[in-house]
Image (cartoon, rainbow, N blue to C red; front, side):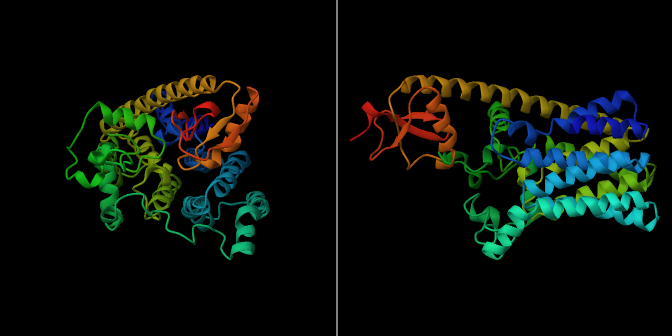
Length: 385
């Protein structure tokens, strides 16, 4: 859906097919969306909704069609109810565009009515969690107001750095500097240079990890951003894409920098769209077209790595999961609650029920543990004593 919306917007704005198709594919193949596609994370879904919102606005800027406006506002509704950051991102993306259109008196009564209906639906759809949280816990963003989301996510030294420096590290360092639970040698505190430990392991980790804190947009994204900044500097001197395009791009940028944790890719999935927007504008400029080509090629390679990595990781994990389920047979599974993600027990219970068994809580450690993704247990006859 995100890719098709982007393709429509690019074609409406006169972008040739030779550029419109690759750029729309890149819009859809956001690495955050890809690596989270087989998980319970919702950041990728949020990124897709924001992409639909952004490119629907670009279409609406050209067509002034109620259909494009409704699509943009539907994407905004979904984004607002996917994550607590959704309303903030949506508001900041819409704000510059809305201000410009109101200033130019381009909004007609029909469009204002659509916006009013959308606002009413948003209020109704946001009863849970926002109004429910406000009533029960005194804050619409509970439990985020109760604890620090960043606690223990990275070292204290890293978290104490400025937002810009953390972003720079995330864009330039190897993702092997990401927080590690089981290998102290790969802890980010051991990394002092962006040129450390580059290799194939970096690509494997990128495609197989849904919430990378360092390098979440891929090993080339720092270069992509640098090229995009160079292209943008050339385009600013020779503007030719219209105020509507510029206002949407500005809103996208504002929705990123507003988050002090923008160094963590899954917290700002819309960052992937910045070089796409720059490449879109640069593709129409003979001065910056070569830079647009570099951006597209590097982003294409990045998306390909993410697709291959996610596909391979999902296949390996699914195969191991099915084999371990077979090992259990019809014996009850004893779940070790000390090392398991208990939130996922409901899903596991359904799978166990399908093969005619159930689970029990282990009273001790498993002598021969069986890994079922985030659940660890053992057969009833192999429980440690």
